[in-house]
Length: 307
Image (cartoon, rainbow, N blue to C red; front, side, top):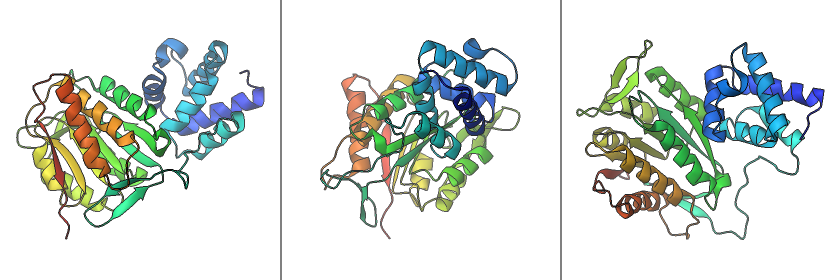
């Protein structure tokens, strides 16, 4: 489509508001559209870069994809939502809930059974890649959600190169239902984040458990796709209904296959008596087995015991 001057200005302002740093815009473009910002817009001020991005999208015919994917990446930004609804009224980006006639998926918790009828946020946190295929893992997760039967019920949020304060703030601000960490874990159960200088910053199982205790009202599932993460998973499960960890080192391919299977399973339609997260965990295990990977016993599911 061809934007009017007014529409282009609104879209530019919305993108600047939703992605106030070049790195966040760069990540959205790569993860959601498989495009590289530097190749499209080069260097310059963020305003100039966004302007070049919009012009390129118009010229190449992917303006609608840009707007819709940007909104899905940052669903909480009201300016971007308003622009998306104005430009593409026949393709609403607002998440839909299940209809009255459609069977509802359910989440079995330690307290009660709750139907999933509202959008579930999946917060993906990555840190210290050091050769891990984190970009591939994130893209596979997005692909699994996008092809799911009930994909409108899920929104993916991404934070990269996270420091302890970044995780703490992201979870509190976004209030996700699912938290997915992909990165390195140490033999003592610590997860490796970054400090302000970009160096390794181990965070203990006890500290992670305390973090999720503060956010237990909305977080329902935590997936620690990192080596030696069963110990923090067990600690976190004191407060969170479902926590998945790894009981020993896990290879990149197995970790990615598990994630693909897990999110495939999460998006399937369920009968009313199925345990959604347990079913998704089992799907991840089967995904590893069907690839003939000898790591099928590494992921473990820890569940909160009812009080």
